[in-house]
Image (cartoon, rainbow, N blue to C red; front, side, top):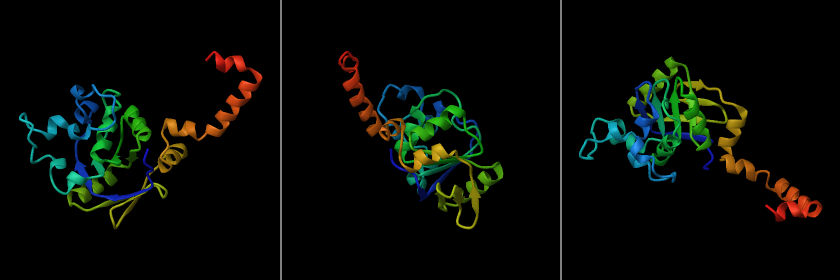
Length: 202
């Protein structure tokens, strides 16, 4: 998983509330277990016309937002089903940070497991950043300092120390396990010496 430390990037404004995971990545694209390739179908039903052509008024179809790495959006983002394909699609498109007043719990947790930083800010601050994004100005997110800046104002956000550690070091569940690799190996060697039949029968 790619570490997240500091990001200064184009931010796309998506002023919609209750964006559910089916809107983020519709159910017909859930047949894959690969984490790549879903970016092209991100927001499929509101991003494309019936003939597959881009809807010119959808934000991610317009410059400079085609290269957006930050999404500023409405409250309760990621509600609906628990599909992990939603953060996969966002990340595959290039989104590394989502800023909203609130998130659905499961989606919020899935973001951390996939290297996306979900930032919760008061609605008034989200509204300010929405205007910044709509003006095509970059936003900077500093995870170490737990701050978001539009160039003139800084907004602080809260994040648990464990989640912060994982994001800053690029640690998913597998990475966390591998941090204990030496201890795991030592335990297996000790077990093999003391109880060789355990590992031989595994």
